[in-house]
Amino acid sequence: MLARALGFLAAHGPRVLVLGVIVGLAVPPLAAVLRPALAVSVMVMLAGMLLRVDWGEFFAHLKRPGLVIVAWPWLVVAIPVTVWAATAPLPISPGLRAAVVLMSCSAPLAASPAFVLLIGLDVSLALVTMLLSVFTIPFTMPLLALGLLGLDLNLGIAEFMARLGGLIGGAFALMLVLRLVVPARALRAHARTIDGGLVLFLALFGVALMDGVTALFLARPAFVLGLALASFVANFSLQGLGALAFARAGARRALTLGFLTGNRNMAVLLASLPAGTDPTILFYFAVAQLPMYAAPAILVPIYRRLARGRV
Image (cartoon, rainbow, N blue to C red; front, side, top):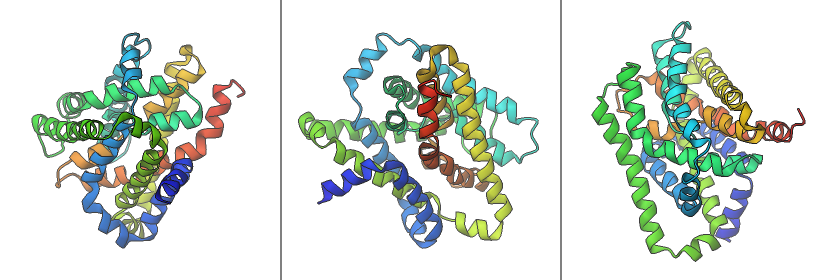
């Protein structure tokens, strides 16, 4: 019964993720209850994503990196610098600018390969590029955000590196333990169940992220709507920019890298930032889940048509 239920969740992933955000907004007490478990859930989710990785495929693609040689620095260096420069002249608050820049410094969404598979794009390219970005952001993000771009996050570069490294390293260690304990054959046999469990965790994460958002919306609706608008503009603009930048690589690869460019892993950031972080940054990261959770449901038909050259 449980396996069937998790299989159902895996089959309806995008809709379940959107439902999680809606429940979080509609039932604030539930979001408040789940909020303290945010950091742990992020580590478990990331470990689960890593557990589903075909490491043989990953290392095989590293031997012929191709686009990854260009895509990795594009995602973790070029885009953050571009966003930092592009937002400088805009009439937005320092907190909102810092949030958008930080978002662009993060690795692509850990679930990107699953979404890319759903859309029908290049899963291997998404997997290798995402993983390289995840493993290197403990170094690239603090150096860029705090060093080069000068954001004020109430923590130093070394502390930021330690927080990110501890989270990602902990997830990787948990994945290794699970792989040692659970036979590879069992992991393959229950892949659908694992995927359903990840969807459930992502949905609960979406509920927890909405803690405080409903109350803030009732008190300052224009502010929350402004954050939501900014998140949609940032997400879709970066997707378009990424696709255009790699247009010569072909539609499927360009759209794949466009999706990775716009959809970033803010869960890792939320779990790593200190308690004194500017509330605007935290609320932006919460509201910015809306385009990420809704994008697959909205964009799947469009991306499929673009990938087939019908638009």
